[in-house]
Length: 107
Image (tube, rainbow, N blue to C red):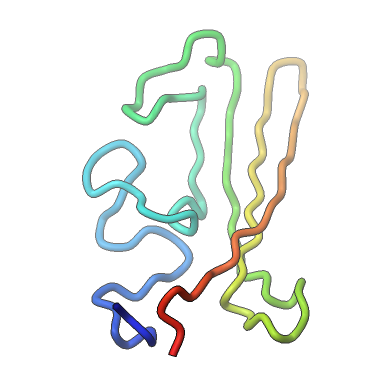
């Protein structure tokens, strides 16, 4: 029902809020919570190692990316998400994407 940031009980920012974690309640509830997240060995949502992926590491970087889009999109309305996975034999894979805020209750 919020139509402005001040209407929200918890102001979202880049990074987790209110003690959120990936592995225990309260859990991450949006993409920006993963900023700075990393894992040594790939783990499932409960923190258990995923078979065959022990030799891999993953990290997540998130930053405001409104400047990457036309000026009609505010700077704080877009996130650039970069996931880096390092694997055996020095193989690194980087995946980058965007998450844009939508306003279902726009004023």
